[in-house]
Length: 75
Image (tube, rainbow, N blue to C red):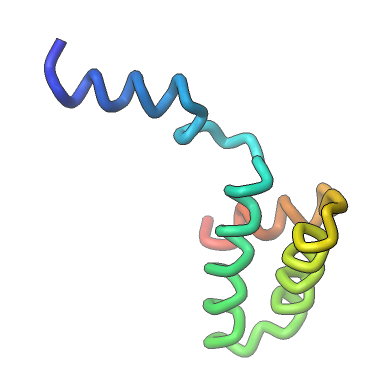
């Protein structure tokens, strides 16, 4: 086993490569998308990012539709 295959196996086991929206992954993505949406003047997406960030800070789950938009923004 070389270093590259070991690293990819480790990331897969920890769920880092997973497409599942985890709280940490979605909040990080929301901040990145918020910055991009602000730069582009995309006010609708800015509001979605704010809802996701506020939900995380309040300890409530964000809506699935908001998470879908955040996690697929750059695709």
